Length: 248
Image 1 (tube, helix red, strand yellow):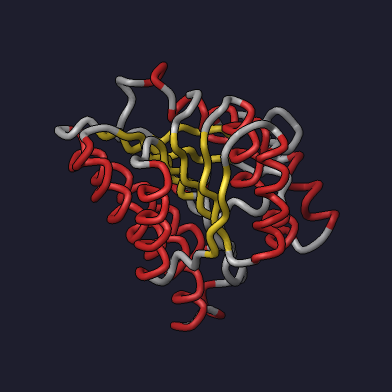
Image 2: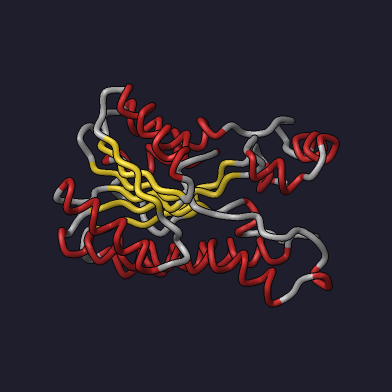
């Protein structure tokens, strides 16, 4: 992992941020992205304090020009791209399907699905040429289940899992691995927004067989493993981390 070149989208909060810090502690060189310059620069300062090289690039994953520039700048700076973590995502607008609209669909799918497509496109462009690389997409327990009141989000994560499997098949002959990590309820800002109240958040934790929420750091450690040479035979898989929810 030391000296590996890593790109992380959605790196400014939650799982993305925890993953950036975890890679930095392993000695990886990082390009982190998000849409807030102040938070991006603060994260870079924190990463560099851990003794690694790090840069921030403002990126909106819904815009192909931004994604292409992110990947091209990474290669220009470090000459390669070893690992990509596609963590940018949104919970969208929770609520019954009858309350959804074309606008709420686009607001979720443009980030969660189009953003993943654009990232995969440009990451694979580089990794297939160098004939190596590991890509990790962020899915969710809802990527393989249904959930009342979260239909658009659920559909977007099902799409991410389909994209992951298809991209893995396209990348396999080039030595590129593509997997997804699918967390259950994790204590992040996104979960707070989705839950909407402390009582509902507590109820979500009680719905986990282990009777607690996951932490971003726990998810980050699994992402590190999936990205690493210790998982070289792993591709096209969805790794579930949800405290036992998929066993219910």
